[in-house]
Amino acid sequence: MMNDAALRKVDLNLLLAFSVLMQERNVSRAAERLLLGQPGLSAALRRLRETLDDELFVRVGRSLQPTPRALSIAPAIEDALSGIERAIRPPLDFDPSTWEGEFRIGMCDNLESAFFGPLAARLSKLAPNARLVGLASEKRDGGRMLDEGLYDFSVAVHDEPASWHVRAPLFDQKSLCIYDPKQLQLTTPLTLEEFTKASHVAVSFEGTTADIDLVARAVGCCRRVVAAVPRFSALPMTLSRLPVIATIPESIARCMAQLHGFAVAAPPFDLPAIPVTMLYRRIDETDPRAQWFRRLFIEVADEALMDCGCAVGIFPETCGKVEPVAARV
Image (cartoon, rainbow, N blue to C red; front, side):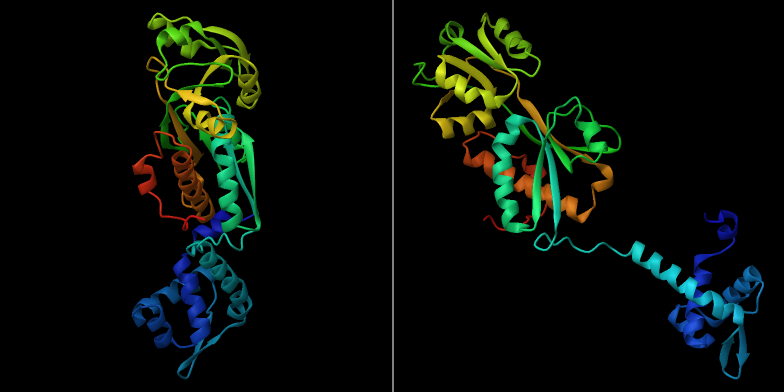
């Protein structure tokens, strides 16, 4: 354990002066290297002698001869100064092409469906020795999982963050109605009457449908929900077997429509947009590897939203805060 009381008596600049004097064995040359005048270096040497209770250097002609005490402590002081220099040295730029390890991201399943595949594909090109790991992340436990180091950042709907977290806005996601035109024939745009008469399937982790139904009731609509599933992965098979409508976030609705030939339509009433944000630890804000991974996700997510036909992309102010990672591959 360090002796704090002993260290408080020592000025780091004195140790640096000692190191340079050991190397130069000459006050004039040492003062020049330290950008000090000779009187300033002589004063520093005097303080060091008082602190260590040893002469340390004896003048022999035009040079300085270190004492046995100076020779004995010189290697340890040199190692300590080298360690401090390495610790405060600016971090090297992150090179994904040679890095080996895991990038870990937390997402709820509707965003994972839209972004994980494109992110994995881009990462395989830019960081071929790395592995991408996705973890399920919900609003209720996103902060806790982040603090436990389970992922680099979370992309979801997040509550007000803790002071040691950073919440970056990504995009406001609206909702769309999706259905299988082979099971259900509807007009475009979807009318309130058609929406009310149709059967519905809900996606809810808790089995409730309160948010959409509150808005629907306010415009005189009462949905008939015939099924509720806890995850979006159950929707494609359900929609292909039942004449039902699902009202879900736009990003996954567009992806499902492209993959399964489903139809999408705007709801016949306004639903509040859902603010999707990125949550990461403040201690990772300037880490080169973490910065690179966050920049990469923002680029990939913006392109993925555009490719699937979403009406929104990543906020321009968020894109503008990051430098491009690489040309699109």
